[in-house]
Length: 117
Image (cartoon, rainbow, N blue to C red; front, side):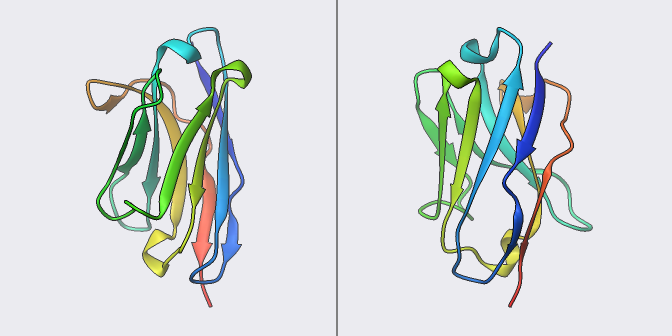
């Protein structure tokens, strides 16, 4: 079973950037689609971006053009580069393995991203 540890969150001003990392344990990382999710206070968790095993990516409309997902299979790590951050990006960010559009692994602790002036 894959275990996931997210890091890289923090407090940033609007327009700033952050790079999130998700380290995965388990030998199946390289065979799974990976995704970044986020959950803002009082809202449901939403899918932000996915990346296939071959590097094909998809993004939610709200982050398209600002966020970039990438992966390093040799390091069992998936990244989320977030640029031009806005207040609405404030949330706890999680990664997970994705199958048929749904998260299938156990959730990690997430990493808090706060966009504030």
